[in-house]
Length: 466
Image 1 (tube, rainbow, N blue to C red):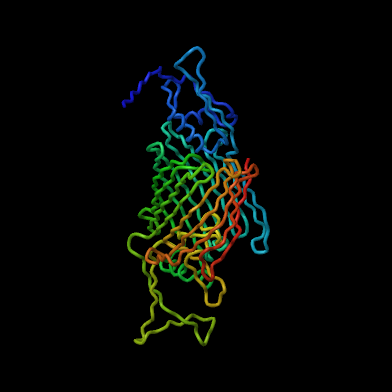
Image 2: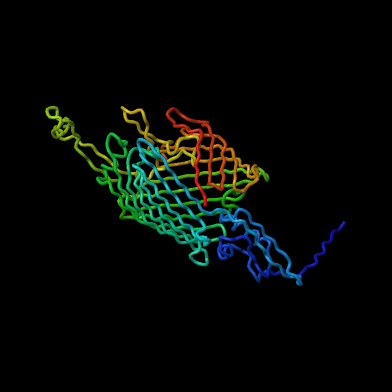
């Protein structure tokens, strides 16, 4: 038999107007610049679908509905009516507490991703207690030019006692100024550039700070580090939503380098990957991974010091040099090489390998007379996640329930990598963009751990939105 197809072409349809409804806070320009369907152009369902995805990825709207009613009295014109339900696009996090060690603890963080409806992002954080002082200011204009080139600035000042973050005992005073640029290459690809200067003063003390960290400082002969820093990145983002994607892929590759002339010359490489696999309407599989590696470039710095011992006749007098078999002063040689310890990677915590305390995985150091291990971090980090998401379980795009398996660890360097040292955990997670604030709640149990690991089965973060 024979099959004939007869196609009767109709009139091509134009879009007369694009109308927005429900955007009481966000200006029309912020919405219009995300559209790929334009007024006066041929109607394209693909362009409308793409426009909806771009609006969803802004994170400004809880619900987006697009209708295309015909224009009365015509057969070849339609209007595009975009109905929007805005969500809170800012966050206000306030913390107040007291402890005998830290005294009064206060923390205020303000983040507005749609500043006065302009689409600009503004952030401000102040934290103060006996051990932590922090001031962060950030601003980003995602459409500095009409082509979508973004421009932003960051101002950072921090005085941190790293031991309060489950890191080894040392303190840092850090200040930085940064300029941030983003250049869109395609619909999904963006190239980013960060250029800045920073100053970092480290305070270490032998007997309290781990010996490898003190030796690094002694080898350099200085505790203040100045750096001209640049970061170049490429990102591809095809996810279909900002808060709870159900399909798409995110990849990011970045290289951070301190330029020649900095106190320490080193680089850090990053790779992030996440892919959402829609299995059904009520089930999505997320696979994600994160890699980090750092090292120094140029010649290592080496210094030698005479070895001394206390004066047996005068404990308060000058120390006595130790002599070798030939009667010459015995020297101790120290080398500063590799990624600086204050730039190490860390793993463990509510946003890393859940089920373990923040930043506690990887190499540790323990003084002979101490019962506690101090996390050192490392120059090589590898973590991964396999997560089953139930996006429609609570019938809200602001809520996500999932079950997960996390795995990975941090290693001193690439040569120390060992699959046998991987840690793993499993559990359930709740993420909720609640009216009172973003909430993340994890309940997990370690699947693979070793003696000395610091386990934390219940983990959560909480903030307040406005």
